[in-house]
Length: 282
Length: 345
Image (cartoon, rainbow over all chains, first blue to last red; front, side, top):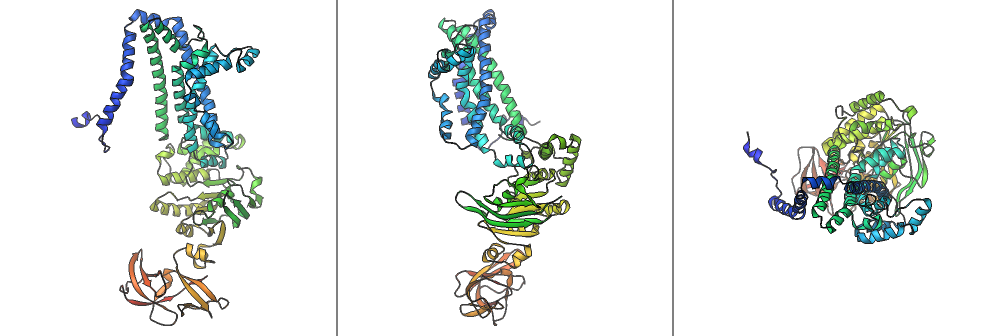
């Protein structure tokens, strides 16, 4: 029975400053993340059980949540494919304007989301450049769930590109040469050798893009049209509740978003950790 | 099944410098050839050109009598071991070795039982049985090297190419693997070319050593031939150690500071030249004809022998020689050196 060992809650380390660093981290985390979230939880709990159930199960809330998470998921998937492609092109090919495209990838980060939203809706509205084409083909982009996705794709794009790019750049050329000399076709090399190696980075990019898309507000409200039950996202519903001084209702929806997001991100992180253990790196 | 390799007039230009300049080389069936040279000499470029990983600007590579370019990458049957091993990190040892078999077109892909058997045999061959479920990151450097080799051998290559196969390993493991590779080659008999900058490795392992310098093959021959009969100053200086003395050649003798120090030189040579003599080819002797006097400055232990550094008047550096006997002169003693063998360039 080694009491000393069981009460040791941290591994001894030769790196000094654990106490200070850990204390600062904990304080910052509390002030910035934990206390506000706790306040949110308390506010939601303050609504009373019956109200919570009523708000949480109201069709409008469920539709908004479904749209928010569904559109975010699809947008993140689209971004995964295109982000991977863009990262691939930026890393593997030399072409004029490469640096320009490389820089342009970051623009969705830098642009105020409202600006993005307004320009997107101008282009995708039925009388806009792209929107008018779509209109002729018989469907509408702006002011529908499709518009929500367009906005979410726009703001999430940099995440996948920036997560994958460094890993792809680091992957050795000799790995591909080895596969080719062993007789693998190009397709097999890409799908069996290159992509599995960047998969953890792709997953990271996916999680980031997804998380960002779930919480996005500014760019979406301009292009979504915000029709209740159709193109109204959950963050907007929260703002609407706030404007009606229904703080508890807003808190309940916020809480639901928080829980769903947390569970999804946790699961993805566990997948990530499992992969890392298997590969011993990345 | 092994083939001969013929390289004809290979020329390769990189953006600023030529990596290969009109290189021709013939590797016989089942031969083990080392490409040896300092870094930047073009040896890796030549190896990659044989594999078809590097496109030659001019020249051709033949496997037996077939132009390599007329064969698809798969049909070339090249086993290539990269310096960095280039193992697939997300695959187990088993999957790495089986990769080449599974990548075959369906009609000539072995069944999974057959693949298991073949991989098992290869694991035995490279002495890694029991590690098939490990991932490359869970292996030591020497083990990774052997996985890379097994993976290359799995496709039953007709040519085995190794790029600095032991470059990243520590001295002890290198030595073990060297002997093991030699044995493996005797057993499997693939035509093998390997690149190294380690002359000891090249001389010990290879049937033939090609010494490259600045994109040109300076000399090619058996280890004994290149070591004992270097054709030029570069080979002589690059292989082993040599003292370089400025001499004047006349009448079949080399003169240092107007005194003859070495004889038996072909009479067609005369004029200023450099005399190269290896430390083990200098003996201490009594004063006499054809000897070089000097004063012992330092004595060091150098493995099995003692290394003497002797100061010679009129020579800025010190002449180094190896003394195998247990009797050694004292520091400061006057000695007289006789050269048993030397090269004039």
